[in-house]
Image 1 (cartoon, one colour):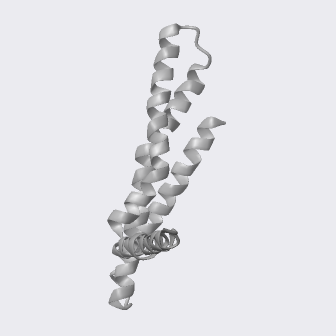
Image 2 (tube, one colour):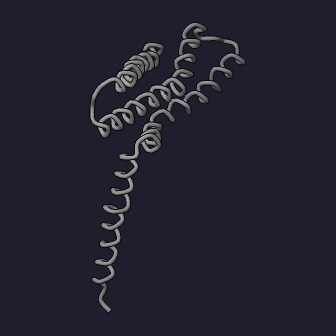
Image 3 (cartoon, one colour):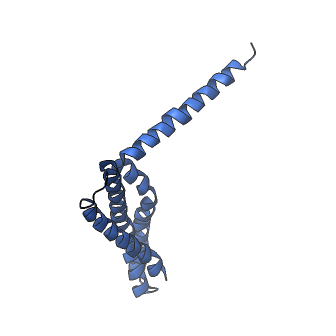
Length: 141
């Protein structure tokens, strides 16, 4: 059961990554506006990078679950320690997978970078700065 839980998302993302790659190949043959073509390329690049990230970060956990399932409950202390060590190591990779989309989108999409900078600096920073000025102005001397 744990093997299915970790391997099913990898197969699904690989399927959609392959479909995105085929879409990227067909984009150049269609007569669509240049801006739309560039946005499609950015989106396809992000999907392919996400699929690669999934394979790199989740596949080791899938392999370890398969090995653990095949070995079963081992009474050898060295085997238990080795599996425990690799479970901790692959656990780190597995949880890195959940933060990788942010960095993938940040690196692959100019539009995402522009929106992130706008939200962080124009909206939140100005709101925070305005809030500080109001708080200081309300102090009675």
